[in-house]
Length: 293
Ligand SMILES: NC(=O)c1ccc[n+]([C@@H]2O[C@H](COP(=O)([O-])OP(=O)(O)OC[C@H]3O[C@@H](n4cnc5c(N)ncnc54)[C@H](O)[C@@H]3O)[C@@H](O)[C@H]2O)c1
Image (cartoon, rainbow, N blue to C red; front, side):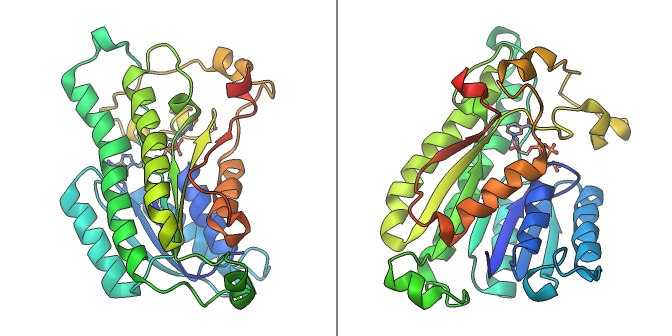
């Protein structure tokens, strides 16, 4: 379904970014650039991909059973110097970028505006929106100057139909970029900003045959929603997020369950691929129906 070079931010651990990284490897991406602030959890994702690729089952490895080449770089995505370094590496090591998934994010402080501080605002916004915008800028710079990929077997036919692409970006927003909830004004606004950015970048990038879309997950079982999975808590580090009881929120969605990271990853792979060649500027909810209720 995929071929070429993919970048995934927030790729460590057992959350959505890790599932996307594994799904890209399985779907045929030949080169992966994976990044996360946490070197330990980033290494876990790399190990998971390597062990799936080396297993004898060809369905667990990439297309044709060939393991992808992986460049793993740990660093703080809210630091523009790290992002500059990251994209210097993308250019010098791989020379092109076919797919970018801007996934790194934090849930925030779970407080209303009047009980939040400017440092809460800056921390959440810098990671969820400012860093995502700066990564998008760098991704578009690379994608605009590269040729339409000729790696896909169906490329000639796809190009003839106008379906070929120079690149695809998927931004991970949230159902909370579309609707509100108590105690989350800064987080919700950061995700609404991502949806707005996605629409505008999609308009500007369309003439270059670059697609830009967002995915808006509902409540997904990851370290963000299950404190027992959070590495920062396990290691006893300071964490801005308070324990959450999400039972009420889960029951708002007609499907009345949490989603899995893999259910989000499957939609991201589809949106990244040329099978989604006429999907542009969309914010695709993967939320068990939360936002229709
Ligand atoms: N889990 C959910 O219910 C849910 C719902 C809607 C949207 N999302 C979004 O999905 C994305 C992934 O979240 P998740 O649920 O997998 O959580 P997660 O905590 O498992 O994953 C987030 C990853 O981002 C990394 N990260 C955090 N700050 C970083 C920084 N400054 N620099 C680099 N990496 C950093 C973390 O180390 C982590 O690996 C986030 O953008 C989140 O807002 C999650």
